[in-house]
Amino acid sequence: VTASATKKRSVSRAADAPAGRFSAVILAAGRGKRMRSKTVKVLHPLAGRPMLLYPIIAAVEAGADPIAVVIGSRQQEVLRQHLKPYPVVPVVQPEPLGTGHAVLQARDALKGRAGPVLILSGDVPLIPADLIRRLFEDHTRHGGLLTFMTAQLPNPYGYGRVIRGRMGEVERIVEERDLRPEQKAISEINAGVYMVQPDFLFETLPMVGRRNAQKEYYLTDLVAAAAERKGARPFPAPDPELALGINTRAELALAERRMRDRIADRLMEEGATLLDPATTWIEAGVRIGEDTVIYPNTRLEGATEIGRDCVIRSFTTVRDARIGNGVTVKESCVITESVIEDGASAGPFAHLRPGTVLRRKARVGNFVEVKKSEIGEGSKANHLTYLGDATVGRDANIGAGTITCNYDGFAKHTTVIEDRVFVGSDTQLVAPVRVGRGAVVAAGSTVTKDVPAEALAISRPEQVNKPGWAKNRRTAQKRKAD
Ligand code: UD1
Ligand code: CA
Image (cartoon, rainbow, N blue to C red):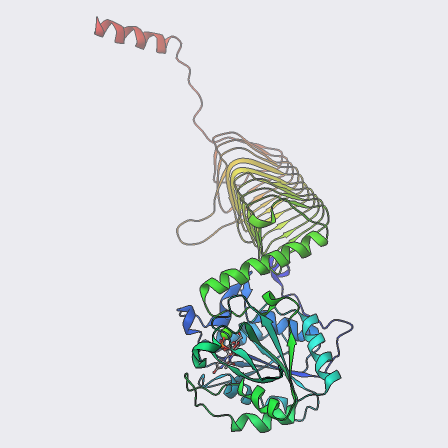
């Protein structure tokens, strides 16, 4: 059940993409020291997926083929796992000696390709596929050696600056740490996105030195080399925010806001109502059907899919779940790796843990926890209940305070509750146990043996009433006090 809810979504090339006419290198081998993290920078999540996946998806959609991704030796296996679903070739840069050195590692992977090479940075995640396509068209139309994306930033600190000559022509790029004081005010920056002729790229790169403040091989030195041959062309980003590079946690938070806005805009365009996009956190892989209403302060994560005409109320978190049409999830629910079918409802305060299936029109209410259990069509568990490793048939009623005792201290056992069973309140079902079709379990019972269909199970001492007992006690107390 959950496998289909969490399956990977494939990325495909847009129909109008210039398929295979350019190849790509995506740089993701840097340490990311400025993040101050044990996790490599490009694995830090942005709207729920590692930031590196955004440039990868954009390159695939734009039609780049082949695509080499340069990764470092740290966390290599984790990185490889993330790359698996995508049509990319991982290439290892054993040591992070600079962006120029990183691109060189991809030379063999791109061998024999005639078209230009797109270079993207794994830490510049907001560049969309259509902008890459326009960069390709611009580069092709003007026939230069290298076209690179630029942006005007009010605060250009940290970026490489575009140095222009007397006539306004591009001369070179100078990194922040190599800037002379009077150059620091230059607000035109290098976005780290390039389209380069392959011969020029792989002939010039080996000649790039490391005589700079960071003693690294700078890819940006290619711009000066191309400019000398009058072949360097700037390509301004239409919106400078698209060029945002992530080097620090503050920049990550900024990108997260932009990415969330973008996701919210897409979902609203597709017909979902988000009552307050600013407080609604929806990750990139989530899909929502038309006329579904999402209340403020909700989180929808992972590969969650929500159908049409649903209502998801505030303070609810849904992760990797599949929700059908016309489903209501009330306030403050936590729903993980579960399936909720059409017309069912959950909450307020329900906890649906992995492996829960609510069939059509089933209902779980306040303080109900469900784990690895199926609740049949039209069945209800409305109050204070724990259902674990259980199967509940159709139209059953699970009374308040019912508990499946699924764990004996060593292993988990299953409970089966068949169609139209009525379980009275405050019942414990000690698994493994089965309650047959249409049976009734009296309130307060501890069920340790199977219940035959249509039977009554009752397991509690019979009630004794002692007439006048309470009154007599009160009188006795009063006499003592006098
Ligand atoms: C780089 C550019 C800068 C530009 C900025 C845009 C250079 C020298 N500078 O600076 O002009 O304004 O991006 O965001 O290119 N990487 C490797 N191997 C390495 C070093 C880096 O794969 O040895 C990868 C990083 O993982 C990252 C990307 O290359 O994804 C850029 O590296 P980073 O160190 O962040 O460069 P910036 O200083 O931001
Ligand atoms: Ca960077």
